[in-house]
Image (cartoon, rainbow, N blue to C red; front, side):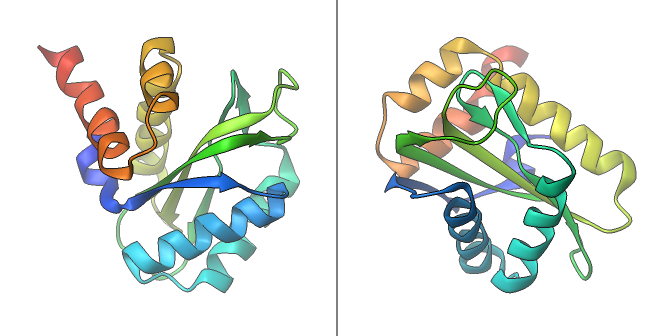
Length: 154
């Protein structure tokens, strides 16, 4: 599994500010609707339901919200970089500014876990996060994310 399999260029966005975690979930859902034609209402409901089980803020300013959706055929992702970090109830209590949401089919067991591991591994690299935080252009952010694995393989 690769980032290019998970993420479309138009599923990446920079947002100047989100007022809350719930507002950010709406933004993620709207981005998923625009990029993958997923109903935003179902997506936000699934993301919020998963978040109620425990926060998906993994630390160091990164959050990895994820959910399963009926009717989805493949695991897909959306990425938002916030210019102004927000409280996300992260494990280290630090505000979040890099958010990669994964949406998986209801029955996608291993594929969902592989995607989560790929994104987590990549966003644990401080150099990758520094590049993402230094750029405001969605196309550049997409390139940084999709080239992360290419440079590891080289």
